[in-house]
Image 1 (cartoon, helix red, strand yellow):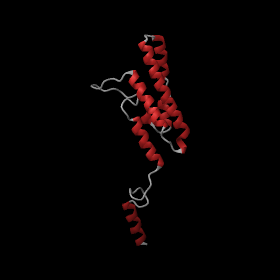
Image 2: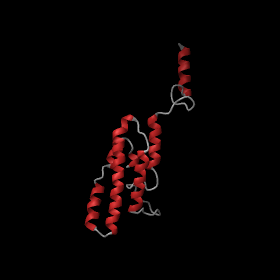
Image 3: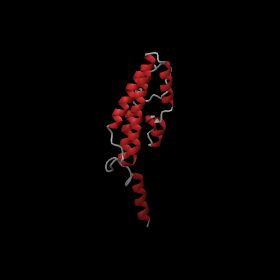
Image 4: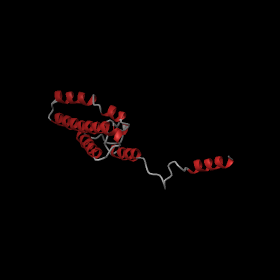
Length: 141
């Protein structure tokens, strides 16, 4: 009986049966999460990140380009089966958000204030943050 307790403690302390680097296969969800976080953490990847003093504020065109790149890179990743539908919806919403930022930049350039205000309202009701939280990828909001 003592021997079983000693062996059990030894296995627990060495991590046997857990997540030792040599013998365990990484969970597909964990690798996917890391890749998504890397893509979504890129400079100007999120239009909702507050700007700190000393860092230049990105232009709407830069934000649109970065969000379009984020959507393109995310669409190349294969999500785990359980996230498939929600993930594809998130990618499509990020792509739409990029188009809205680009459209707003055009309206502001053309001094079309009414259209810019309407686009701003559409951006403010943007479902990207909610969808990102629903699929557990809040870093992409």
